[in-house]
Length: 168
Image 1 (cartoon, helix red, strand yellow):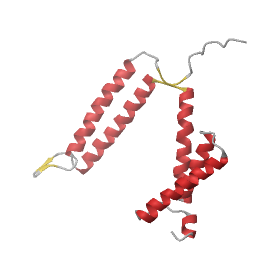
Image 2 (tube, one colour; image 1 turned 120 degrees about the vertical axis):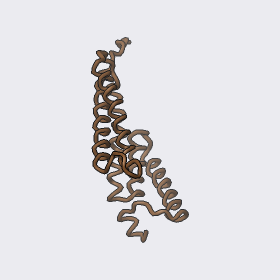
Image 3 (cartoon, one colour; image 1 turned 30 degrees about the horizontal axis):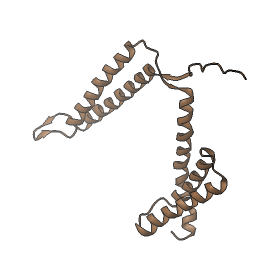
Image 4 (tube, helix red, strand yellow; image 1 turned 180 degrees about the vertical axis):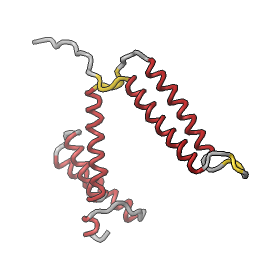
């Protein structure tokens, strides 16, 4: 029986320093947009008190000051500490990307049909459940949600062609 070599350190997908710089720049941009728009609508002190952009302007200014401080600290840092490994990013994307597809599919299929497909596929793919269990579980969940929201609570949710064909 062969002994396995100790695991090498996982490859980094992004360093902590890089993500701190990206985050600081992002919030610097957001703060700048807030300040610009506040100036556009009036960020001064009028005859009746502060104009509508007065407080948002200073909130944007505070965001920019904090972002510049964080950016300078990140640029000054020389640590190459890993923030996330490539395998961890793959695990996150394995959940995130199907969720994006699910949200997009809702627009054409409706909430209930998209949910039925999403639950069944996830149970098969991630949970390794049988096709029968996955199909029945997703069907039962969707029927219960339909009855609860559409019939009992009378909350209209996103409908697709199947619900339209059934008169909902």
